[in-house]
Each structure stands twice: as structure tokens, then as C-alpha cells.
Length: 67
Image (cartoon, rainbow, N blue to C red; front, top):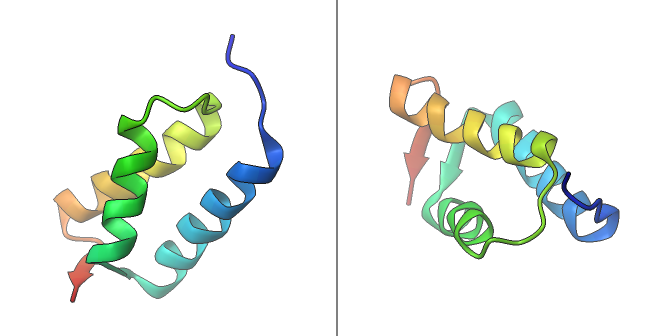
């Protein structure tokens, strides 16, 4: 079971919610989410699923990467 870290993950939730609302994400936002996943931080399954949903939306064309 993963530990819960509410404060650091609040920023992740806000970032993901913003990206999904706008329908696009910057390269900097992409780098931040990628870094969070690869840093093997103690993410909850919910956080990991939210981030993966963003990457899935990019692959399927539902989200655009902007510079």
C-alpha cells in the first residue's frame, strides 16, 4: 500500500485538473509530470492514475502539447 502525501500531491491534482480543463499542456508541465512519475515518489494510486490519464489523452489526441 502506498503512503499518502496530501500536501505535495495537492499541486499535482491542481496541475492535472488545470491541464484537463484547458485541453492542452505546455512542455514544462509535461516535464513536471514525467519527473514526478520517474522520481518514484510515494504517489497514491489515484495520483498515478490521474497523471497516466493525461499521458493517455496526449496519445489519443484529446490533449495537445503546446510550446
